Image 1 (cartoon, one colour):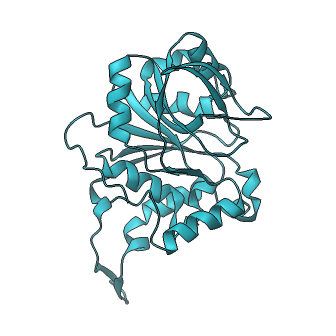
Image 2 (cartoon, rainbow, N blue to C red):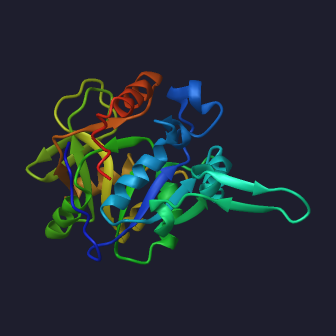
Length: 269
């Protein structure tokens, strides 16, 4: 299993995670909770994503909530309760004693209600008000990888484009990237037949992306990213290792099996 050393004190960035979609292809689970809260190994997939970023030193999160966002709010408001053994003293002066500490005590989590109907670009647009730095990280609340986050940041800084996306090579039905070397020439959301690299959904972005996001109905994967590609402002960080989204029940079962058998490639912490 790949192991990466966390980079402390260098290039530490905020992480925006899109958590507001309906997750219609995973209706068996998302009828009851938002997709980022669907469990893998007993913890929400969102937790796994955040643990992965935190391993590389990025522990300041902005969660863009929408559909059933209250579930995510409740989870983090009661995080210590949800992850610890506790002793309760009942009576008129009740007390709670937690028996565990956890590695997430230095995380900062901003829970941002971006609206139930807002599209992905609109959610990101709202999140930018909470990003002070020029460069930040972006991903979705339903995908896992073992790509080296800090190496993708270094790549992004070398090339100076507005956006860098991790390019991966899984099976079909995802947005295909037509590339000339490291520059993305076109961004097709979901072509009928796909080959080669696709968008893995792990981005490094400059805050100037905001000028490509006109409103709440803006879909990040359509006009904004196609415009960046047309202008030569979208680069590809190629990753040949593990990547898996969680769009279907079968994919959910696959991720849980990897975790249960101790062979989860993303578990590097």
